[in-house]
Each structure stands twice: as C-alpha cells, then as structure tokens.
Length: 191
Image (cartoon, rainbow, N blue to C red; front, side, top):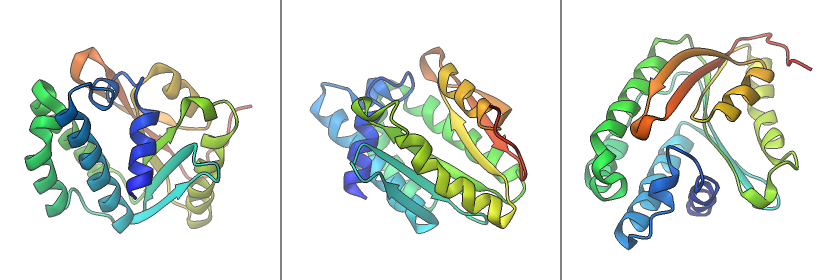
C-alpha cells in the first residue's frame, strides 16, 4: 500500500488538482500528502482491491459495490493531515471530497475506480489500460456500472472514448474542473 501510494503521488506530480500538493518543496506538506494518500489507499483496499503494474509504473485501486462513505480512519486522517497536506485549499478540497461521496451515494450499486496513476515514463505503453481492464471486466461480469472522477480534459476525453459519460461536474480548487463519469452495464468502447 505504501509503495502504491508513493507511485500514485509521483504519477500525480503534474496533475492540476493534486500536483501542487504532491510536488511541494515544503517537507511537511510533502510528507503529509503522502501519509494521507497511504490512508486513502488503505481504506480503499479495505473495501476493494489494489493492483500495481508488473513494472511498478502504474497503480489502480477499485472499490466494490456496497462500500460506504468515508470511514472513521479516513475522517481522522483528514482532520490530522489535511491542514498540512492541503494547506489553504483544505476546506475547498474536503468540501469537494464530500460532494464526490454524495454523488457516489446517489448512484445505483457500482464499482468505483478510486485511483489510477501511471508514471510519466510508463505512459503511452498500455499500463493504464491494462490496470483498468481487470475492474472493467469484473464490472461487466457482475453486471454493475463503473464510476470514476477525472480532473483533466484529456482524461475526460479518454474515458468518454472508453464508454464513460459525464454525470456530474465538480468545481475544484485553483479553477480546476472535475468530472464524475459513469460507464453503464453493457457500454461499448468507441473505436
């Protein structure tokens, strides 16, 4: 879980939402965001599964249907680590997380793609697609939709080509727009 969280942080260094925190030169913020990511991953694994690519160039975490909202551990970690990890954006980010959880709670039972991160040197090699395939196959076999969030236009476009549709827009800190995206049972991939 720790290795996966560190890969995820490195993969998000240029992300418009997470990048400023994970790439921070402030040693306390640097450590706090990594500890917060470890906590989120550990809690996600409790309700789902985690996969690392064989080359350790990517990570994906899935949560299965029926999982509840943030656990007591997540809430405690946010309370303890968020002030340093997220700095002045803390309240806006925690509000965003609450809004994202509320959207998921209103959906029918689904598989949630919590994290997908691919290191820059492993991109454009099929690592992300390979990691995503297991969860997408599991969802198809169990006839449940898949839900995820994207915080870049390029990721939104990529997921739309994979059969996802935008069901919610989010306003994130620093003017970033996020997208809650759902792929229904039986969706076909655009070619």
